[in-house]
Amino acid sequence: MLPSPHSAQTCETDGAPPQHPVPPHVKMFGIAIHQVTMDDAIDWGLKRMQGPAGPCELVFTPNVDHIVQLNQNLQLRDAYGLAGLVVADGWPVVTASRWLKKSLPARVAGSDLVPALIAAGASQHNPRIFLLGGATGVAEKAATRIRQRWPKAEIVGTDSPPFGFETQDDENQRIVAKVNESAPDLLVVGFGAPKQELWLARHRSQLNAKIAVAAGGTIDFLAGHQTRAPRWAQQARLEWLHRMLTNPRRLAGRYLKGAIVFPRLVIREYRTAADQ
Image (cartoon, rainbow, N blue to C red; front, side, top):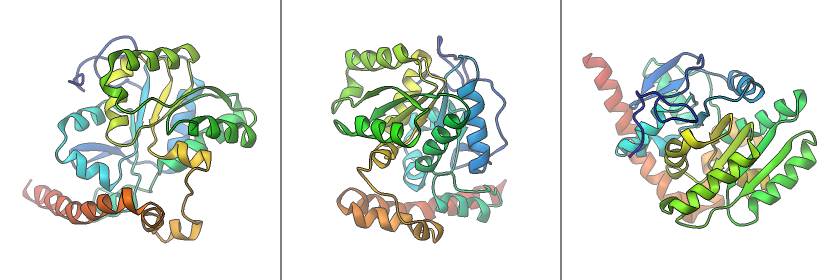
């Protein structure tokens, strides 16, 4: 079971989210989503990356798939309750917020936020970064490309856990110990949802990292293992289509389920608000 989101927790003890000031938020789909732009999120992250060691802050980036999973996965909801920053990674979530009159100002994609944090950190100091996740060799390739693009960024560790690691106590403790030995400012975790969120919530109290971003496929993007949609497609809000066409076996079913379930959840959210 995850720790309760209402009990006290730091990186040393179990319990609630860190008590740093946070931006305003709206409550949607059973979770709090912060009303931030990309610049707001970068500023929030930089302050924590450059600040003193303390409670490990989690950053989650919900998209339609996350919202669909949250509808049935109570542990995932509890995990979200422990996050210090939750940003909408997906135009449908932003659009739904506006329709529900709970306006989110912008999409803040994790695959944009992570490189932006690295770039901003490298312009001001030497950020310590750990890449956790991806297939064998992918994190190392991402590390090489980060060093080439941002020479001041210090990659202090990489790890690609084996399949099924999350059920193995020894393997989980090995990963935690490796992260803690390097004490990163920024821990980038790419296990996919909901594994990455559940893992971070379960181990946050043990992690010696200033912030940890549940970043999905971002390590693959940083490595060049997968490519982002062209800028015009992102601006036209068609990045989902590009991703599905480039990886249909993995994503077609997920997107179909989201297209069916997400509108129902939005309508339910609207009706619930109308009844209050």
